[in-house]
Image 1 (cartoon, rainbow over the protein chains, first blue to last red):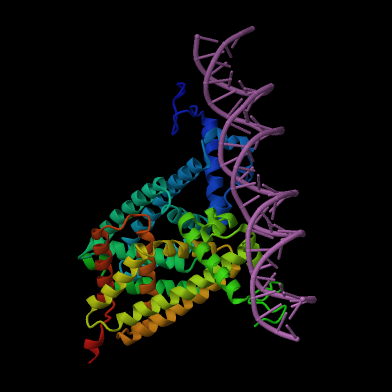
Image 2: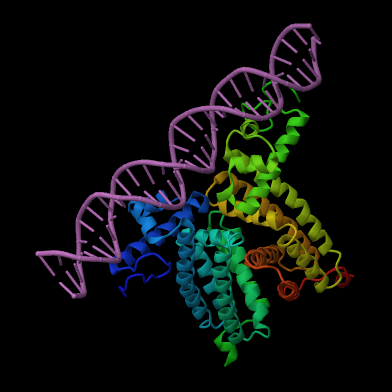
Length: 214
Length: 214
DNA sequence: GTTGAACTGGAACGAACGTACCACTCGGAT
DNA sequence: ATCCGAGTGGTACGTTCGTTCCAGTTCAAC
């Protein structure tokens, strides 16, 4: 772990000590926060350093370039988000009615549009930037594919007769609801509209929970 | 039209001659192109000037600040896109089967992901930036609301028993399919998956064209 | 033909940017 | 005790940025 020349990600960055790893992680966290509320356009090495409470020089030590930093921040985000999505869809399978399923998804979206708003905005910043950067596009594709596989398994267990298509529809509806409501402050009636849309989607796709399968 | 002090949008910009209007429009077009393929992060006054084939000084003459230019570019985009969407959904109503309707929407999305890709990317750049800029958010909201009204009318005419919810679902699915496939090159099998998802969505929502209503 | 406003385009400003550099400190291994 | 690479942080370079300025040109109105 401390052999010279060994590196976590770059050919010529030195090996990291525990303390070094903590600092590097803090930089990535700071970057995600800055991207979320200033955008990639407002992301500067100085802004990240200030957000992390570190000197500018530290960034150059842990990341070769700004682009490398952005890539690693995206990877961190997808890793973190994968757990959250998995948890959300695990809850989905415990519902008895279509309404229960819809409720889990509503809560998921609601969380993203309120407490985790910064993180959600950052996610879409990355997605759009993926259209221009092949390295980010690879992460996007892997992330999206992992999601689709998980959700199609869930759909299958919920009685879908075409799990692949249903997972594509569900993921699209979720993404669409998210971006369509990002520019608007989230009031209760909007949340209700989201819930209604999800209920109808789930119902019409014929997805049902445990009770129906017993 | 040539009274002194009169302005199309700013307090202290002079009135525009025809030639001036052409130049201003060219700047906005160039800006949309740059935003689409370099992103808002890569958008600079110099890049716009180069894209438009104009000197840098010209931009300062027609737009007070870069932010003003971005706002007007967004307004131009929504104005232009409104026509395209309207045309797409006008075609939808002429279909006899759910498959015909889905086919129109598939063609719409396909066009956005291929020939009009730059424009589509720019659109999502604007949407994300709307979360940070109230002036852009107003445009987003108005644009989204106009879409929803139009689509819900169409849904109603297609026999929907809940046009508002159905239009929300349809618009979300479309948006979701677009962003999910922006990072991936569009191959024929992807197009087929989009078509399948749209068919299933339309069918399950119980929407039917003219034939069913006769 | 003179006037004045619309328009042109090149040059220049200070500020902020990404990155590189380097003298320095620290801590574990020898 | 010493050594050496990981880690530190302040500084500085060259570039690009948004914006401003202004002497000059065009052209319709009088």
